[in-house]
Image (cartoon, rainbow, N blue to C red; front, side, top):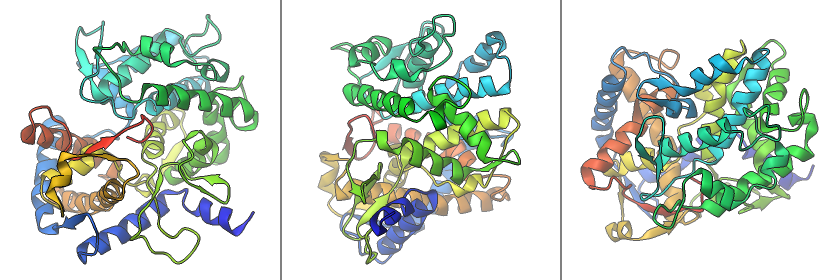
Length: 411
């Protein structure tokens, strides 16, 4: 291993995300950032807003984790649980593989739908957009066996099918038309094709007890936890190491693709990682979403707070709309910004650090701690819903305060 590759691997962790985000926030508090000012005096009202929406959704404060599974509950019906009741999985591991299959596919397809796209859900009769619509579209494709190579076993995802998935097939499953456009359609299809190829090439990880499938990662993680225990940051680390190569190679260090990692001139480290800011949003969203399948298989997941908040536009929009963050040049809000621009990188990084600050405020007001109210529950309760609500208050179409040009692989 070269010094550069060692440096690269140091960025593939939740700890690296949190450490660099806190450094970015410290620069912001010293008013040394080029794009944003930070006003922590406004964070108390944000905490009250988050608590209010949390109590509205979860009056008893029995809050589930922020994960993809929440989006499979429609009008009070948990569709995944209904499937599990009739699927007749032979054992817990078989169910775990299927749930990993679904979670991985669904999360990787959940990178911002744009404001126009909607999914006509036949079961509820609703027209549903954004993350919830993407979840149902992916669930319906999964249930129909669209990702399976075996017609008699529809509830699985096979590497051989993913490797040849076309944008046209995805468009059909997601009801995409000229009048119902989905942002980054080709990018999503290409991501799944790369996933299929990688899984097929790594049988030691993804085919320990079955043919190659993303859900084979369940067996890999279960094996890591020799005492039936695995730490949440370890889940993320494995995701970044094993699935990292599928992401567009925006930045390579020592030949290692860094995924959702970007450049910002203010991040001075004086080593090979100088100027690099890891965020790993979708991978962390997936790590959160894999916790419950592991728990259902009686595998204990520890240190859930070792993961960070998610650097996406609802959490970030909450801080902008509530005045914790403000653009130095307010006119920038009128323009769309590339995901790799320093403005967006700065915004997303500050969001991660501010979520930690906000979590402490929320726990203090509710007389709870990180054990009884981990960050994963605050996000669900929580910050994501509050970000969406304040966006609707500020703008009739509910769009975020800053527009990011998406290729379907970032948000």
